[in-house]
Image (cartoon, rainbow, N blue to C red):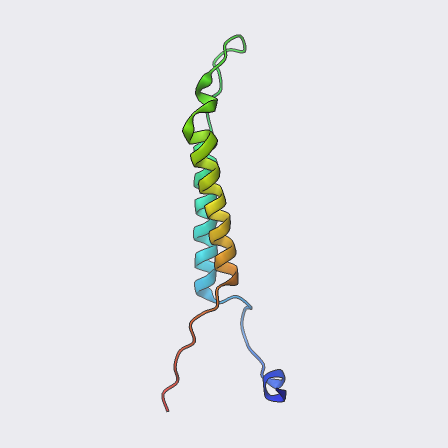
Length: 86
């Protein structure tokens, strides 16, 4: 156990591959929010029922939640350790 405590790791706490996963997750979140956009009425006297479309009510929140889950997975994922040949 003392050997583990004395080991010093250099670099960032999160490996480079995990940062790529985090960026992909944020991209998925942005796509989800873009799917939620629109549906406003042209004039305040008319009501546009497009705000209740499947895309805005169901699909976009699922995409956003999937993106946040992907970011969480990217943060928590352990990198594969390379086998050292002796």
